[in-house]
Length: 423
Image 1 (cartoon, helix red, strand yellow):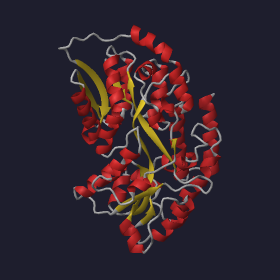
Image 2 (tube, rainbow, N blue to C red):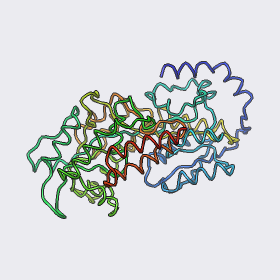
Image 3 (cartoon, one colour):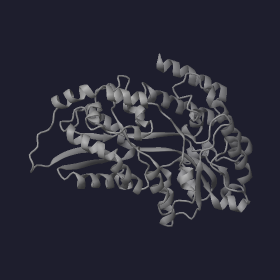
Image 4 (spheres, rainbow, N blue to C red):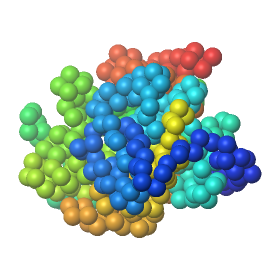
């Protein structure tokens, strides 16, 4: 982070030149600048609409016109719009691994001049900015939201089995052993000890949790212990919901957990608000809790895996000054506060925002301690061809989990395809 800060400070001298020569939009005292910003699923993301309302209240000279796009279509539509010369001024990037490709196409503005001119604090992002700092030093995105994996557990299932709830310092071995003790019943009423959702992240992420490996490595042997665990739980112990069934029946992780069918489920912090809402409106009666993600024996407690959602400025925008005001507010202390009030984890996380989230109605006891992490490894680092690598890993993950290939065959194919993609 110090290195990043030095880079930012180093361009302070050029910042003034860029700002002075930049396209500062003209505006009279009576005019109101309208900026266009794209996002997704606005109705289910009150954190965005609340923060935008707070921004407009503080900046009455700027109106934010939000373009709401369904999440399933967002990344593709954003790409089409930007390729077509969209007049968007700023936009949220849903799939952060596409940031580098957008930068390569010249669609992201370098925000270093604005950061320097405003002495904008990027230390408060706890290192997340590095994923949006390009090889030439350009800062093309600032984290507006961050999420990381925790372990959700069903208190009713633990209580029925007479087993103590897990703590915040436990291992994947203990997780597997607990799943055995918590599995009961059979058929449609069977209670599973755990659920690993069908995303490759729900196996492969545990390999990058150590902060030493990434999905860009060409040797994927570090995935092997976690595939062995997943297949052992699925095929031998029968403590894990079957991958093929989850895929063919299109079972969503939230329905499996919130109907009380699984005792433990590693999932992102984004699921917290869903769990609270479902219980609040009576669609679930599950008494749930969260603890820190388990770790390998040689990985420190508090290490987890996560990602950040950046907000970026369109290089083609003619209203960059207003767009920067918006971005700096959304990713600053005030925006972070609005996100936390809505139960969303801002990119600028600190004791204040975590305490705010942990005190929300419906949050389980002990949540504040469970949310304390010491390291967040990026599931998809912001480098060239990461999206292609990620897609390839998803394909090979399915082959392993379906038993179409052995673990060794799958890992070997991953390595070969990695080298082919990165050639």
